[in-house]
Image 1 (tube, one colour):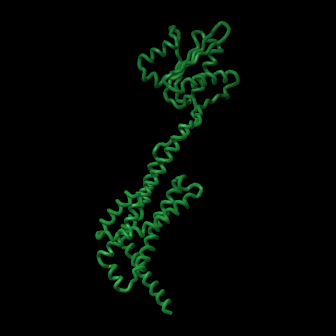
Image 2 (spheres, one colour; image 1 turned 180 degrees about the horizontal axis):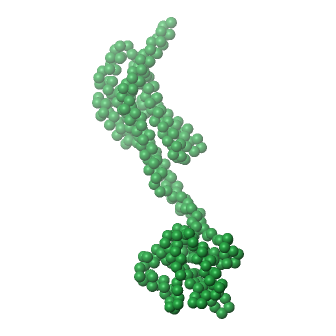
Image 3 (cartoon, one colour; image 1 turned 90 degrees about the horizontal axis):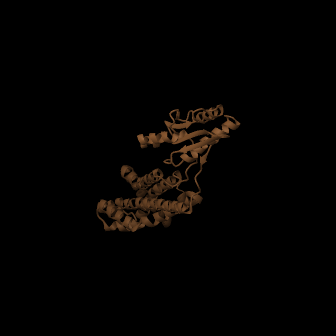
Amino acid sequence: MTRNRGLSLWIQQFRAMFLKRIIHTSRNWLITLTQLMIPFVFTVILLVVLRTLPHPEDSPPLALDMRRFDENYILYTNGLNPSEEMQNLTELYVGQFQGTGSVPQYVNLTSGQSIQEHLVEIAENGIAHYNAHYLIAMELRKTEDRLKTVAYFNAEGYHTAPMTLNALDNMLLKYAVGVNHSITTLNHPFPRTVQNKISDQLMRGFQGFAIATNVVFGMAFLASSFVIFLIKERTIKSKHCQFVSGVESWTFWAATFTWDIINYTVPCLLLIFTFVGFSVHAYVDDGRFLDILLLFVLYGWSMLPFMYLLSFLFSIPSSGFVWLSMFNILSGK
């Protein structure tokens, strides 16, 4: 009978202490919200920054054609007296650039000027304009028994050599099998080298270290914030009045710990959801988020009693929060 009465009294005291913490938190909801959101906000900001920064990845295949260049002049010539075959070839050559943003320009050689001389003249008038608008060219020459094609390219561009060969091959293909056929040339990137892969691993390691450091930084502030209420209760003698009124010491600390661990769980779950939402593979793949959650739980069970103990060193809540925050950051707790 005495044991049941003692248990009932303890439950009433625990309920009263727990209800007091709830009321205190609801009246100071802005401070509580700030305290609980610090680790979450820090982590979200860091992950957004890491996602927006450029990171190594395989380049996409690049189509080698003139569609990427606007207002480009494609020079071509078929001589002074072109045959019907040469005219057909030049028409097929020019036709493949229609709608690509390039402007084909016919070079009239009646003055005896060669295509090389024409390009040199343009370059001498303005090398910047020449490099920006004159990338490829083609010349048809008639010999005694065959036609000869010559492809020109501006070596200033990395892809102009295969581009001009692709244009020449398309002209010959269309002439041989019909205008409905064409060749598309792609520059597919090589597989990443061992050095690239090592650099990628170092980058991922840096990101993981940055996330871990940021979480520790946020948890340092969160852990220190739990002493504000305790220091305030002790300095204004509120805790003393409760003990004098019959509240057991272990009942007070049990209610305090229960409410604090509930509040501590909220930012921990927010961090787990953040890692899942941002697909932080090092923290969520293969069920590793459960390991992270276990670490948070163990940290909370060890950190809260330690903060309670250190709270007796201070008599001003703000000073206790600041000094314990610095201690947690420097010690990595």
